[in-house]
Structures are given as C-alpha cells and as structure tokens.
Length: 130
Image (cartoon, rainbow, N blue to C red; front, side, top):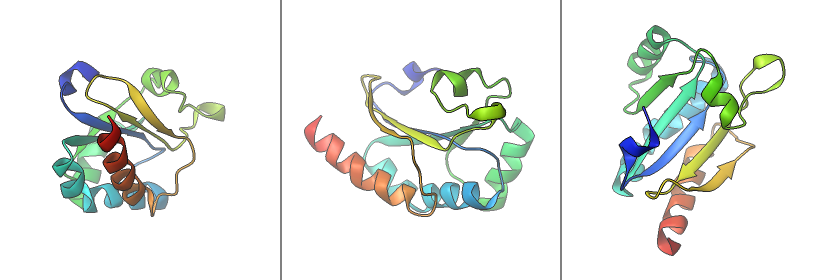
C-alpha cells in the first residue's frame, strides 16, 4: 500500500495504539460515525497500528468500521511518521494528506471522543483553501 494508491483523494491517516481498547474504540467509532461526511469530501480514512490483520478483521467486524486498518507489526511506518513512542508504544497521531500527497495538517495530540468531528471541520477548511 502506498500513498500513490490514493491520488486525487484526501487521506486521513491515523495511528493508534491498540484495537478494542477504550480510547481506540472511541476514535475508530467516531471515524465510523463521520465516515459518510468524510467520503462526501472526497477523503478516505486509514487507521494504522501494530495489531495483526486478524485483530483488525475482528475490530472492523465488531464495530462495523467502513474504512481500512493497516497492520504495521514492525513499526517501521509508524516510526517514519513520528508516531512511535517510548518503549515502542504508539502515539495517537493523525495526518491529513491532500490529493497531491502533501501532509497539510498534523494532529500530535488527539482526544479520541471528539477527534473525528475535528477532522471533518478541518477537512472542510483545508479543501476550501487548497
């Protein structure tokens, strides 16, 4: 999977610590609940964690998540995006990437319960001025 797979699409790329934990579930369900609004803005959501693909499949099914979750068991991509924390943990971070492949917004401090709402608002503003 590469950013080039999403040319002509805005991308919300979010990194999160672990499937089916309270904060990560709130964040994922927030994206689920706002997914139609995000898609209507020509954007796609992708979540990344160290969980394996089986764990992702269960998490997606349990919470009816309509977007892709990617597994980075080695942590290489997580590290490249600056989301690798102390002792190998994952920082909760999100990037908005425009259709040209440029990172236009970074969220280094995320509140899981309200994050998706903020993304929808910021996507609207970013697209207005892009």
